Structure formats: C-alpha cells, structure tokens
Length: 433
Image (cartoon, rainbow, N blue to C red):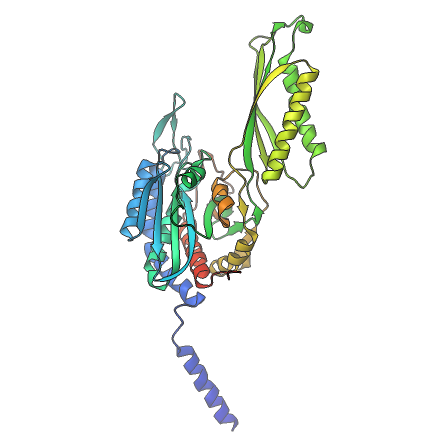
C-alpha cells in the first residue's frame, strides 16, 4: 500500500510539473515581460544614446518629441502631439475594458556643458540669456524617456492580455518646473483620465539593480522671493544720514534662520536659503538698494502658506524697525510631490518580486529638491520610484553635474518594473467602494 501511495504521489507530481502555466499569473507575466525586454534592450540603449547625444532644453524638445511620437505610432498607439508645445500623449487600449493608468516620462535637458568623455556625449550648444552654453542630459531624462518607450513596447506586445487602458505621457520642461502644469492646463487628460499614475526618476547614489521609494511627501514645494531694500544712499563715513540696506538685508538673512529654528515645528521640514545678495559698488558708499534672492522649500500646502506669512512678517518687522522701504516679490513654484501611500503599498510587492528580493528595494527619506510630477500627483493618485543608475566604476556621481554618468543596466530593469506594475494593477484593480 505504501508503494502504491508513493507511485501515485510521484505520478501526481509528474502531472503538476507538466500542467500548462497560467498565462495570466504574475510569474507567467514576469517571464514574458523579461523575454520582451531582453529582445528590445539593445534598441532601447541605442535610443537612449541618441537622446543623450541630442539633448534639448525645456520647451524646445522638438526633435525628442518627434522621435517619441514616431515610436508610439509605430507601436500602433493613439498619438496626440503638440500638447503644451512639445508634449506627447499616447493611448494603448487593451483587448478588454478595465482601469485607466498613466505613465509619465520627462524629455528636457539642462544648460550644462558635458564633460563625461562618453562616445555619445552631447556636443549641442544653445544660447540662453544672451550667452552660449552646452546642453546636456545631466538629470537622466534621456533614461526616463527611454523607459517610457520601453514600457510602451512591452505593453503593446501584450495588448491581447490587457484589461484596461494605458496613457503614456512624454512631458516637456520638467527642469523649468512648469511642463506638467502646462500639460494639465492644455487638457492632456480632458478626454481620458487615469485613476493612477507612475513615474521613475534616476537615483545617482544607488547602483543599478536597486530601486528606492519615499511614501508620502517625496519632494518639496519650490517657492522663493526677491527682496529689494531701498535707501537714499549716502557716504560710508556718515551712515546716520541714510538707511543702510546691506545691514538691513543681513538682519533679514539671520532672522529668517532664527524663525525656522524657533517658530516652526521641527517635524515640519522647511529650508530658506538666500542664494544671492547684491548691493553696492564701492567700499565707502552706502548703496541705494540691496537685492536678495531666496529659495523656500516646504512640504504641503498648509506649511507652504504658513511659512510665506512668517517670512513676510519678519521682513516687514525688520524693515519697519530700520525705517527702510522695500519691495517683496514672493512666488509659488513647483508643488511638493506626494506619493500616495495606499498606491505605494499596492505596488511595492510587484517591485520587490521583479527585483528578486527585499534587499534590492529600499526606503529613502524625503528630499527638499523639486519635481513637477507633483502637479500630476495633486490631481491623480501617483507614485514616483527612484531607479538606481550609479555606475559600477564610480563611488559617486551627481545629477546636474557636467560629469554625470548613468549605468545603462538600469534601463531594461526600469522597463521590466514599470511594465509589471501596470500589468499587476490592471490584472487586480482596486475595488471601488
């Protein structure tokens, strides 16, 4: 009897091993995605290098957007161009109805002269504010765009399995901090609106093969002000004859740092940096004005407005005490990026599975830099993940640097992860309450 049981178990095991795999299972999807990515990876690397060699500044991404649109059209997607100037939107409709999700990649480069020595390094120059400068993909947007195209290629191959719709957004002018807002105002989602959006940004401090994430606030509001303190001016030997705008400006700089340290909750992260302070032309003359330019970084709308009120109060009080007149030009810029915690929790198991273990997925603290994906995230639950691209031969590299280099092994991995996030989401959409 024991022998018969063993034979039956062995036979059963034999049958289990040979049962056809469920093509809709996560494992089967991962395998198919990996196969497609392996096939298209060389062409994606070529695209990335072409984009890197031909960077374009914000709102001038003419060549890039044409390349992107042509690629989408070749995949058979519904393509719309010219959104907010050079923005591109493409729609992939699955074989069955289901949720609508979005993927965003940004296209613009920076006014930086490249010094990497790469064979495909940028030799492009441009004129900005009357001076000639180099143009370089020093923030990885060439990789972001390539991952967007790669994900479109993978998902288009799997169209027959898709129960839902994917909207691909190639965005201009992230470096100008305004492209996402302009695309929204131009109606990029007027006729089709995703219920969730996803994006990558390269991580210059993490090796390829690792992805990091930040739940909740990930980047800051990027605001700022220009303060002009006025004076009649007088001789430096008789400072009592006029207001000294330099002294008043110095008091403002110090007082603002004291305000942060003593008036704000330490958990409400805030940075105020006065980056320029221009005044005077001679050592023995008190000038007629001092001009201060500052950046202000906060998280969330409540903190953003509260800090502005405090800054205005501090400046008004110091200037009034010194009997100085002033002009304050305060502006709100890019809004803070908020990664939806529920959506983040939903996709992290997919990311971990594709990466091959928890050791390749790490949580990062929030940063005070800016990212205009925050405009999309304000209207649609969104998540931006950070894709490791630190080259193996470097101990460090730095975004926005003329020597920034990226490990291209991050590209096929990013395509696999992004494709699987979308496939898992469409296969198991969140329940509607």
